[in-house]
Length: 382
Image 1: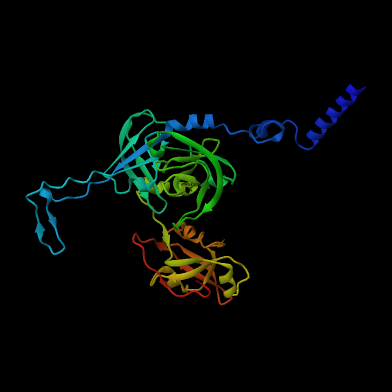
Image 2: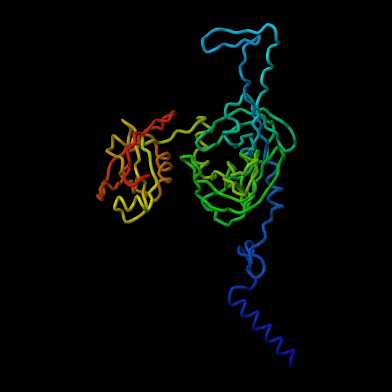
């Protein structure tokens, strides 16, 4: 009798678990979940095995500092001093920059960070099989810290597939591959800690992860569990000594995919420009301006003769809409402007003294040299 009661109890528990959705799963859900609906353990072994053949080491040699022959030096006054008693000073050794990269085309096209190869006289790529090739720089973009280089290997090379960083979710597993401190093909894992991080550059909307990234890992891929690249490792927050503290940043791959065609064909990126300096909206500033919502981009300055000034935009205006897209955050607007084709006429909505105005704005090309915007005190700004 007791055995029958126990059997009945187990039957009730199993039936109840199935009714609550905790029973066995199959199909697509079975690949995402294990027994009783619990998340599957990440298969880092498979991901690492698939990734490592396409991750490379990038070493850049910087030009030697120029030294006049014979140890001559010229003073500020223009007179030349020459020491005949002592041998000429030794020339300073060449400096090297070390980082990572990954192959995106079997013809030898590689993605890496621009800061690794900027100003280099020679770039050497070492494959996982230890073969080394001199690379030529195809294109680079310092604002996003992305560079495209290429090697001629006379063979079909393994590649990594580019994913969709917009679909990446906070809490999702990721893996970073690179060459930290010269340790080739090292892997580390973690989760996506946050998205849309801004650390100072105008086009920063970075992925934050706790996957360990150290000096030498820059330019390496950040991938999801499907082995697709969702970001390019870019920066870390460090303590004294330069090691990782578990806060790392990667450039979203979707941002890179936007500019990749220009880098491959033109060697640089052409961006739209409005000639306006922006300030983030704060609760204090919104209250001072009499706004009900803490949103929009506050105009902190305009470039004289620039597109914004010509359109009638003034310091203190609050931009709330750009080309039909709502502006919730001042950090979003530089990217929206940069993506706009040069000479396109867009409509923007602004708030000025609690009145909504709609102004036409013709986008110009971003100057190569930074132009100073004329600023004025913004009400409530510190």
